[in-house]
Amino acid sequence: MSHISSPRVPRSAAIGSVVAAALAAGLLAVASSPASADGVRIHDIQGTTRTSPLVGQQVSDVPGIVTGVRGYGSKGFWIQSAKGAADDDAATSEGIFVFTGSAPLTVKAGDAVRVSGTVGEYVPGGTGSGNQSLTQITKPTVTVESSGNALPAPVAVTAKSVPSRYAPAGDPAQDGSINALPLKPRSYALDLYESLEGMNVRIGSSRVVGATDAYNELWVTVKKHENPNRRGGTVYGSYGAQNGGRLQIQQLAPVSEQPFPKANVGDVLRGGAVGPLDFNQFGGYTLVARELGKVDDKGLKREKTRKQAKGELAVATYNVENLDPTDPQTKFDALAGAVVANLSSPDIVALEEIQDDNGAKNDGTVSAEATLKKFTDAIVAAGGPRYAWRSVDPQNNKDGGEPGGNIRQVFLYNPERVSFTERAPGDATTPTEVVREGGRAALSHSPGRVDPGNAAWADSRKPLAGEFTFRGRTVFVIANHFGSKGGDESLTSHHQPPVRSSEAKRLLQAQAVNGFVKDVRKVQRNADVVVLGDINDFEFSVATKALEDGGALRSAVRSLPRSERYSYVYQGNSQVLDQILTSPGVGDADDVSFDSVHINAEFAEQNSDHDPQVLRFRP
Image (cartoon, one colour):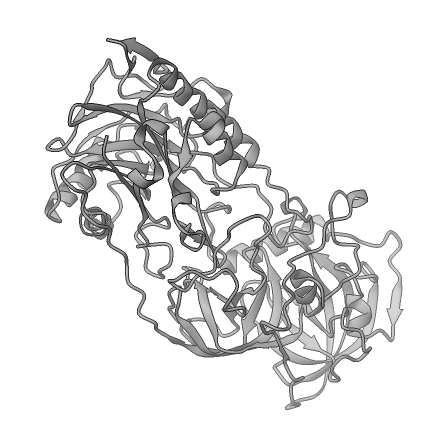
């Protein structure tokens, strides 16, 4: 499913509940002896680091011009000094958010106000998230002095103004945090954005790099030459290629009053956007547009891969995003149509996120027969083959995912092209082992699960192994769905580099699969082994390196140019999560044809949030 975050409730409810919880629990930091700070200006509150020097203190009559009012979600308004850089210090923001909570909003853009209240540092998502904090004034008393004033001129955020370096290294003495470091907005992208927090900013016409989502937001880049790909995205190619030109775009107007534009990757937000620069849990620095341009549709098309030749075996992986019989028939039809038209009916399809026969209903059901029948029937209706399937039902609620859903991996295969070798099908807890049969490798259970008792798979999907035959040649296929990135800190974390806590589990999972592949190759050195699925990690990650350890496997995505290596788009970064890896027996890179088929991740209208991959080779 998603890259990092767990399923989100509607933004207004999510932000409102988080704010309420944060206020109830206390802000990020409060002065031990709250003092009064009279006569201060906004730049005094913001200071030259990420946290206010006045946090926890009362401030009185802070002057500013209202630049935006938000009446939903985290309710409040932004104010900015009427004069530009009032203190002539580029590191100090001249804007700030005033959080009103449930109090009536009595101001409008253009009002000159004086605000008294408490300075706070609110951490979206809570302090355990690693997120940076948003400096704000809470429990405000507001005096409107005049209305209809001109708004402070917006600061232009451009390719030239955003530094190429993303963030400073965290302070080792502060557990890797950058909170206390002096801001250097001319040196680091994150420092620039922090120095503009709460201010009125403007971007010009910008390319969309993250499609409009269900929460009425999209991502653009102000750096059109920053790691681009041919379809209009910007590629996350390493932990040092964070792509600082990305910004999330929302709008101030409620969508009930002003529909949010639908955009795909590669479209252009013509006219850009103008509004306050916010910081939130679901994307970090966000331009909340008071003025929003129009989308210039560049006509992005869903890709189609070629049909495999008669002597080629086509193996695919596709995360179908919690598919179950309660989903509308239109979802089944769209996914099935993609298998036929976009993937050209591969011989073997490893599916991830197939749910049980009643989806998230948590009643002990684990069978997915109804789900698979409905899906394979839809494939036939779309003009595809009558696929057979093989899988192993999980134990109830033991494999993670949506409670009651019991997601698992499943093999579909076209019996007119390939045969499945049935060998004492395994169950949820019995491991399949590598055995020798006639001098060649075989599985003790086919289908079977790889090392299901290993603690690496606790509350996670266990790998599904199967033995297939194509034109007289045995092919071992191992379908995977590694642990998610849930719990990892965002790229905008106050820890730099961010803490990627979920890597530890995927590393152990990768080591288990690598060990199994090595067991196959110990028995049969030239065995054809295909490891595939939603690996939930990048081609340069420690998990991928562990899968490849000892030359047991190689990731096929690296056969593509760097700019084409992606299967998922997260917060405007096109990146690899789904992979197909092959053993040396499958052949050299020149003998293998790999395609990441872009049909979902770049589009506002998605049938899944993942793009499928197809590998073709001659066993």
